[in-house]
Image (cartoon, rainbow, N blue to C red):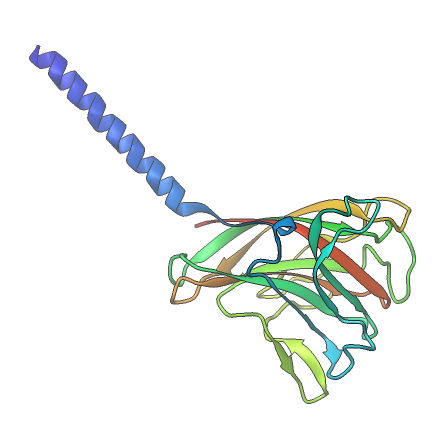
Length: 232
């Protein structure tokens, strides 16, 4: 009987240790964003940089929650961003603050994005292709991404995103926005990427996703889903 009790006690201890390990795994691998814009914009914000102050109307800069365009489901909502890239460098982006992270922690981020693009593949365009020369970038940063007015009259980002397909210290190249067809028709695309980013001293960080355009014409995208997982 004593031997049986000892065996049972050993099993209980092993089971408890197993549960403890599982809890630790959950702490080091967590989903911090899992948003579907059909439910609205939520706490996501949008902004634009690399254009001159006062030219918002001329460059048709803007966006917000909007219905998806045809031939997609026009009853479903998405987060729309649009501009005419007259500077050959417009960066239009969305951002969201996340909390509850470990302070000053370096994380590995696995990001999944779904968006609608009407940029055809392998097509010539003004200044660059409408698909392959519009570069999708993302990052996790300890400070809020904001526009800063420079002496030359242009708004620039306060983070290092580098240019075109190059990754910066803060934002990293993921892919382009070509829709995989020869037609300028909206298709839902899925893009994923992995990069590193850091939280601030309060355990906060900003997820930022945007497009660095080398196509000197109109780009209009409809973001539908964003999911971000972090581990350390």
